[in-house]
Every structure is written in structure tokens, then in C-alpha cells.
Length: 285
Ligand code: BTN
Image (tube, rainbow, N blue to C red):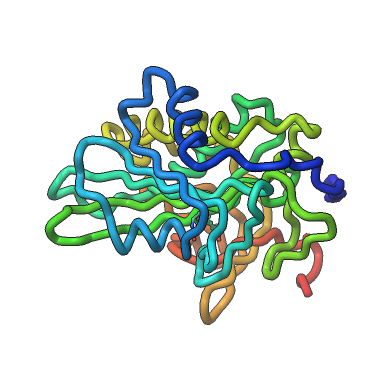
């Protein structure tokens, strides 16, 4: 595995364009897909996911997107904190509505991971892999975190809030709690990082395309694309849940997006937990 080596951040522009200029730039980059989206780019909020869960926009046929320069309490999976840096990160959430009567969307968080991976591949990132359910890794180090939450307000029907945090330029010597290795887009693209409006537009366009596939074919229509990028395919792994951990071989995912773990007593479906690689020939510390 390539070791992470962080460069000091590039010289930042003297002033960041005001939010409305950023919104307009995203719309321009979205081109023909622009009418699908409502973009709100704010200076600061507690967490873009929290804001959209607490105040989910009604279904008007468009995808509402909230981008924040700063989050005072960014959230990660399993109750963790998510750290980000103005200009050094892209942090945003988007709301996707489902037709009334739709059952809980199985595998949706994995679909979001595939969409992000595809968008970044198109931008030239190589060596992207997915760690179940949806961490996006480059050479084993985390580049993107994704938090998918359901909003079930009775009046507004079922909606999913997909929150995405991408490291663009990490501060030097950053240490992130509970993350073995982190990387950034500057490192993955040899310093040639697209502007945030172009990056956001590329991600939203890919999410929109893949969620259309998912709406018609469910997770089975996306499963192959996830499996192709599975970081731990057929490797020995440990799953750490809230109370216990399990070991086995990572045998991919099923049609609902559950992780399949081949153990001494048979194959088990894993619905929650943290996956890590288990060194061969001994217990991990
Ligand atoms: C994880 O890897 O644990 C998920 C991290 C998700 C972070 C993003 S940043 C935008 C959105 N708002 C949040 O508070 N969290 C998500």
C-alpha cells in the first residue's frame, strides 16, 4: 500500500467567491441537467445532513442540495464526527424523494458510493475502491465519506438525505480519529484538483444518473458496479459491530446491499458495522 504523504496546502485564493457565485458556477457546470437541481451554498451550518433531515424540502420533482463551507458539527457514520476544512473539503447533502408506498430503499448507501467513485474516475482518479458500505478509498486510504439517512415525515413521504464529504487538500500532518489512513484529492490527482463547483456538478450528475438506474432496477442493477470496486473481495476481514466482532472472508454483497461474510459456520449477512482487513496468519492487534 502506498503511504500517505501530505504536502502543505496549495496557496489559497485571497478571497473565496461569495456563495451565490458558487451556486451559479455549479448550475453552469451542470448544463442540461441543471433544471433537476436546486443548489443552496451557505457559509456555515451545523451539518448539511442535519439541516436537510430537520427541514426536508417538499417533493417538487427536483433534487435539493445544501453545500456548506463549514460545518460546526459534521457527522459521520455510527455516531462519529466528520472533520472538514474550508477550501480543503467539499461537504454537501442532497435530498432524493421516493414514490409513495416505496419500501425502505435497500442498498441505497452503496449506490451513492458507486456514483461518487464513477464521478471521480471520470475526473481521472485511479485506484478507487469501495469499502462496505460506502467509504471511497484510494490505495487503501479514505478519500470520501458518505452518510445516508432517511427522512420519513408523514406529510412529505419517504426521502433520503445523501451527505458527502470529500477531502480536497488536507492540512499537513492531519490525524483523524478512528481512521487508519486518509488521503485527499490533491494527492490522488497530483495536485490538479478541479474547482469545487465543477466537482460538485460532476458528482450530482452521476448521482442523478445512477439513482435513476436504481429507481427502475433496484440495487441488483448497481450491484456489479459495487462488486467491481470492492476493496476487500475474497479477503479475510473483521467486522466490528457495537457489541461484538466477527471474522470471515468478504464474499461480496447481496441484492439488498448486505455484506456477505463467509465464516466457519456458514455465510452471514451483515447489516451494520465497520469492516477492516484482517492480517493473515495471526490476530490483528
Ligand atoms: C463517514 O465516513 O463516516 C461519513 C461522513 C459523511 C460526511 C458528510 S459531510 C456532508 C454531510 N454532512 C454531515 O454532517 N455529514 C455528511
